[in-house]
Each structure stands twice: as structure tokens, then as C-alpha cells.
Image 1 (cartoon, one colour):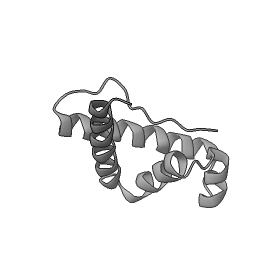
Image 2: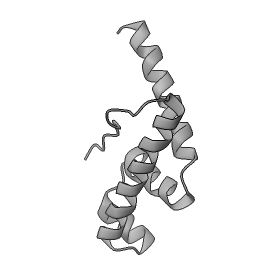
Image 3: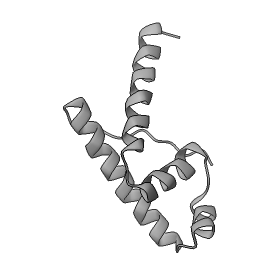
Length: 87
């Protein structure tokens, strides 16, 4: 593995975790449950007593906010946010 790529990946992870910490509490919780804890949307809906569509909408808005926070911090618009949920 390329050491330079590892440094870039680690730096990106730091920026991402900082951006997540700046989200409003509900968005931060949903992003954490979905992406970091790999909880399904259906399970999150049951846990929070929210409709599935509402959970999806909050996740969508949280991703938009993360993109903006990262763009502001990095000084440019990121091409995309690489958060992958393994099912």
C-alpha cells in the first residue's frame, strides 16, 4: 500500500469525522448509525419511531450538509462524498 495514499486517506477521515461532529444532533446520530454502525434504514426507523421516508430524507439532508461543511473546510467543492454503506 502506498504510504502517501495512506496519509491522504487518514487526513480525509479526520476531515470527515470533524464534519460529522458539526452536524446537528439528529443528523449526526443518523449518519453515525447508518454509515459507521451500518444500521439499516428500516432499523433506524424502528429505533427512532420515524417513518422510513423521514429517515431517508434526514440522511439525504445530512449528506448535503456534510458536503457543504467539507467544501468550506477544504476550500473547494468535493466531487462526491464517499460514504459507503455495506449491506
